[in-house]
Image 1 (cartoon, rainbow, N blue to C red):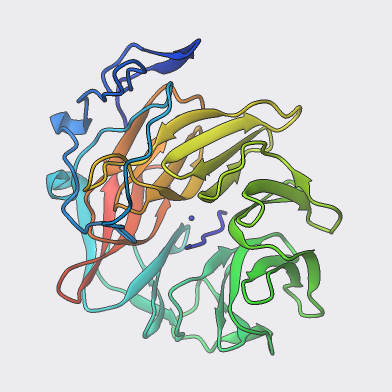
Image 2 (image 1 turned 90 degrees about the vertical axis):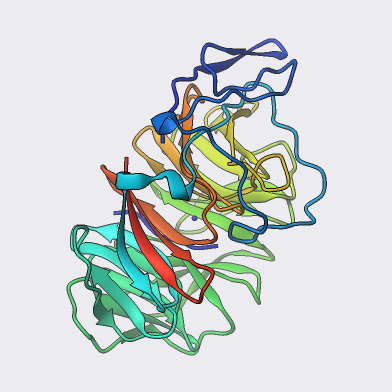
Length: 368
């Protein structure tokens, strides 16, 4: 199962680097000399600039575009209004939809005002699992976990209108749940700047790192990987404690998502999705970049999820796409979404919640 944390398509291009130049055999790569992207796209629809102000956290005054690095695959793909039959709207209404997780039991989505709901992938009716006031949750083992009013709560994935079961109480400020294993939850306390391990069965929290501002988090094979904004680097530490190990060498204040398969580290810095081998550490390389920005350039990547051989990602401009682990191909699943609130991926589709312009929100299924 995959952890879901909020803040995280196909072209025929083949991209690589040859010295300081980009060598591309397709049309969706960047020519290092000209800095121009080709026009290949899914379904024959070229990617168009997003509408002004579109995208979650879109920044109209973002300044000059960040340059696309040589060798990075530039994704192309359809805008939301070009998806056609590949998109099914599972829900449309006034609910304040947030985080999304797809599990064997169905698709789960948070409504910040009413609780966490479940829907069959082919259905249209939302069934409330548990009453809660949260826009974020963690789908772990057989349960849902979320933070609310100073406590971490739990409810079964199979429940219907369940009473929340408190896991940890009396917690300060805002706790962000980011990962889990069989016996523990891993969370970041933004107010105290602390990364901690909390026993699922109850008990005392164990601080793992202090004085940290965590942006992205991933647990893999007994190690916790996280991006730290003050140091502007990615670190890892053992899930049972110890000293953090710095994994990256290029300092970047725009760190976002972190993912790993235990062999390679993937993370985002501004518009870039980068990769580097974990052992031994080597110089990182850019795999790809975010989607189109309304004011020109590309969107800053904020969340990533490794599914098979594809890191899927979303950016601040309302785009969601993927990049192959070697950077050879990449594509947008969708661009130009007004606001992406949450998303998850299974073998056949992307599920995302989006906020509309008239106080409405929708839950989409986009076939891959």
